[in-house]
Image 1: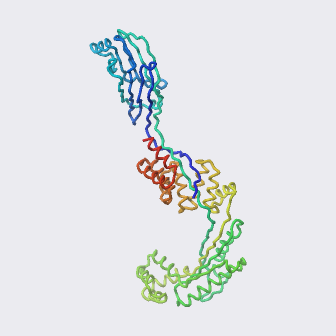
Image 2: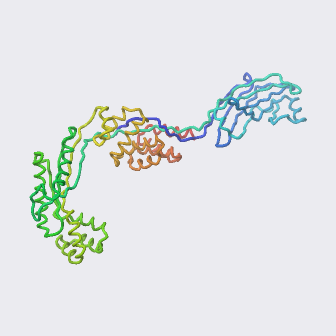
Length: 470
């Protein structure tokens, strides 16, 4: 199997973001911010940083007020300030009480100030700018200078797990198809000749011929074989029913052969003297009074004539009903036409057939068409939906359809398709994507590890993306 493509998906698993930075200089290098981190939960914003003030030299009557803030357009929020004061200013604040909610530190007593704050989260903060203003003050809080410097542009919108979808290329195989049907050709009692106008024979014979014609008249198709299997009903001696089933089947074979002048090797025949399986199916689904008893006889090991005699003797009324209403349908001929469709290589022709006769296409030909389409486009997605409709039990068709369903946020159908996608490494990988999109990250990583060990290189990238988001 080959991959058709690897494409980024349109569905994402959301995570809350975190923004970080390190070593931001302030005030011409006198202060630096280290280990800056801003993150959020659903309703809170967390800001933490280390303010290195080891290079900040202040005379006794000076102080610096550092005030972080968040700003976006007209929205501004001042965060709690930090005051670093010289000796006199520090004791002035201690004697009189600091005039704000700023944390107070004495210059020279600590090199690194740990800053942490938790505030209510608001939507506008997702892409706000975190800045720090500084105010240099003297005696009586006289402002001697200052400025504002940007620390970090936030990107806190929910982060997304974006999967890379791997579509599998199906193997190219011969396109062998079979059309089957049942005809109820009437024969006179105990005779094997066909009378084309007898009772419903014009209709029943035409059913067979129409099936053959539908295939034979298609220039893209080659008939491989026609099969006919004849059945008789259980009444009368088994030996006579065997003669009738065989003779009538051979007569029908010859009738069909002459209509088309097929070689003898094209038409194969078989027969079953008495259709006990068909009788069993009818009785099992019926409400006959003697239903269970008749079924025991049918399923017994007695020879066919003994079975019929026992049913007739022990259940005469039911037998009369079966003889009149069911036995005629047990005299039938099942037919099949096996054929091969030619291969298609022209992409435009394949696309036309996708719309008009998708039953003529193989999975591999549908892949060729999809390869010529824009990944994720409507026609691209529809191609894989057509594929899984035409090949509902095929593992590759289900795997590719699961990828398309996940791209379209259709997790219900994705789950259904994945159940039939088999156990290939690419199916394991796809189940990892499903688990990640469904929020089960532990299961997703375990599946990606399994896929990676089986040779899917993209699984390592998926693990890294989940770990980065976590």
